[in-house]
Image (cartoon, rainbow, N blue to C red; front, side, top):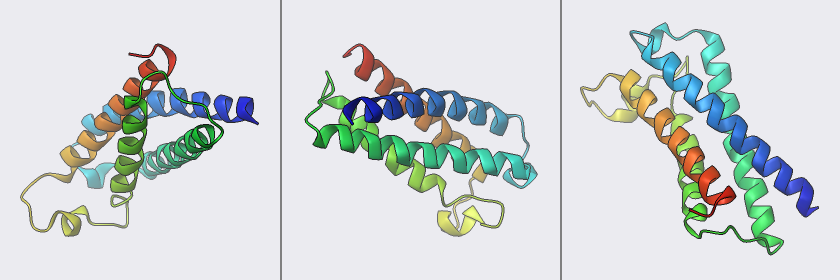
Length: 133
């Protein structure tokens, strides 16, 4: 069971790292959040679910007695899951301005920042998981 969880954990980490990086670039190329096509939002939800599956597999590994080489790996995982939950506030039928409470900020930059942060958490998780630093 541990081997299966480890394969799921590593596979979703690599996939999420690649996808969140691609989505970050995709957002930068758009002028506004409203201009993002439906395909973008499908991939965004895929990254969110990938992050949740990654966290579930990581929790399973932890409960099975497997520990990452660096304890910060656990922090990066928790931050990634939290970021995926924040990203759920965005969507084609959702107005992120309601979430932002009247801030005069372009939601595109919030969405970009969350995706870049998620990409960074995936990257740090991969380095602490594989190399221990």
